[in-house]
Structure formats: C-alpha cells, structure tokens
Image (cartoon, rainbow, N blue to C red):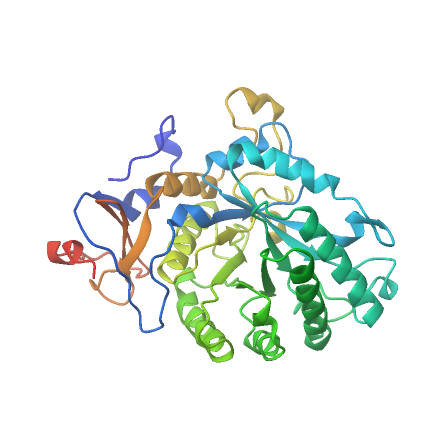
Length: 399
C-alpha cells in the first residue's frame, strides 16, 4: 500500500493512487532496454518534476507550498519586452528576485526566451535581420548574466501556434533560433539550450528545425505533448521523435523534454479527480520513455470559471489565501496537487528501470529502484477490472 507523506490528510488523497502504487523491497540490478532505444541510467524521476508558473514575485508562502508538492523545476516566460527596457539596455531584476525565492527550496528554472518587442519588427515576432540580431543580443546578455545558475534556456514558446505573430513561420523561427544559439554559445558557453517547445509534437515543424542545423546548439528537444486522449498514447510519438533526432544528429545523445503538458479539469469527460490521475500517469509514462524533465501545466488555476478550460489546468485553485500561511496551505489543493505530492514522496530518489512484461497491452507495471530498494507503479487503461499477476522472478531480474 502506498504510504502518504507525513501530516497528509488521508481522506483527501485521490483514491486512484491507493491502487496505483505498491512497495516491494528487493535486491536487484538495474538496466532498461527498448525497441526505441530509450536512454538508460536515467536520473531519479523526482529530479525532473516541474510546473509552469506565471509570476516573478510569488506570494508569501507560495514557493514553500509549491516545493512541498515535490516540484523541482519551474518553467517561466523570460520576456523580451519586460527586460529590454530601452534599445540595448537590459534589466533582469525581476528574474533575480524569482531565483532568490526559489533558491532556499533548491528549485531550478527553465526560462523561455520569448516573445516580441514593440521596438522591433513593428511588435511582431522577429522576422528581419535587425529584429533577429536584437533578440539574439538580448538572449545572449541574459544567458551571460545568469551563467552558471543551472538554468535551461528554451528558444521561444509554441512558435508553431498563435504565439508567433502575425502567424507561424518555421523559416523565420529557425533563422531566429540559429542566431540566438550562436550568440549564446559565444557569450555564455556551456549554458543549456533547448527548443522549439512546439504546441503538440509537430513533426513537420520539428524536422524543419533539425534540417536547419539547430541540433548543433540545442542540448535537448522540448515539446508540449498535449492531448485529450490517455497519456500513454504519447509513447509512439516519443519513439518517432527520438528516431528523427538520431537521423539528424547521428552519434549524439540529445534528450527530449516534456516542457508543458496538462489536462484541464473543465474538458469534456474530465473532472478534478481524473485530472489528478492524469498528472501521475503523465509523469510515470514520461519516465518510462526516457523523458527526464516533465513539466505540468499549470501551477494554479488561471481563473474561477468552472466551465472555462483555460482556467482549470492548475494543481491548486485560483484564489490565494494569506490566512493559510500558518499551515502552508496558501491555495486550496486540487487532487492534482495531492497526486504530485504523493507520487514525489513515494518515488523520491527512485530511478525508472523497466516496464514489466505482465498483463496485457493496457496494463502498466513500472519498476523503479533506489540502491537496494525497489518500488513499482501499476495501473491499467482498460475500463474493466481484472487481475494481473507479477511473478517474483520478474521483480528480481531487472536486466
């Protein structure tokens, strides 16, 4: 039986989690193999769990509550129009404040280099040489300013979607990304860059990026695998993407980041309990596919309209409650928050080993290991209850 974190209210834990995980203690060896060449020797699953935020100045107690759920990363817009205060003049103070708030909790930042600036290209996304060079200079200045702080720099947000103004243009995006990659490498060598943070796993857009040579500058490829279907359906997409990366960067190990992915509790057929279930399954299936950073969208709800999908992606409710400072609950926790807290506590420090070959295709039994201790997560996508037997030999042999 899963053991919740200390001081947890057992009656508020999402009921699916009690069937999702069980604890087994064994002495085993670790290795993972896959037909899709999933990387082995992954870091602990909890090292890569994160959440999107929309602030640089958190409310009192907010980061403490966020950290208590087990989030080790935050993903946040690093906005060009906010930080370039005049042509060639930069003010990064808001992001210094954010990093200072994160530091006591050892939470790292993934900063998105975005979007447009009123001073360049008539406020549209950069598409002239002057606009591209201005963006690249700004990005390089930011990377140099924060060099060595463990930040991941992400090249734009969903440029294949509405965020590229006036409309998506992969040619303009790749030119900007190349200019930015070269500038950051020159100004702050060794900084981690990723892209293109596509809405969905847009294979044609991704391939155009790879053909343009962006894998020379990116140390990871970021995508947003949104879907209203089950999280497990992402596996074939990751496999195809990994094979595409190998084609354009033979011999290099370039990982995939799940930089933004969530389920709105206002979607048809969804509710808060199901949202919490999807969060756990999305994190677990990412781990099973060698995705070492999984960032959930969103930290808190963006509004209070129960029927507006954009308002209902959060792990906690919209309203901040200063009266909760005494006990650390400055937002009302949704089942997604409780799922994150439970999963991150249970698998803290555990590395994914393999999916056990038991049951049928809808049955998932994932084995995780830390030193001499083994834990598993088990669930099914089948709508019908059915038994699954896990032979002891499958648990003892992790090769």
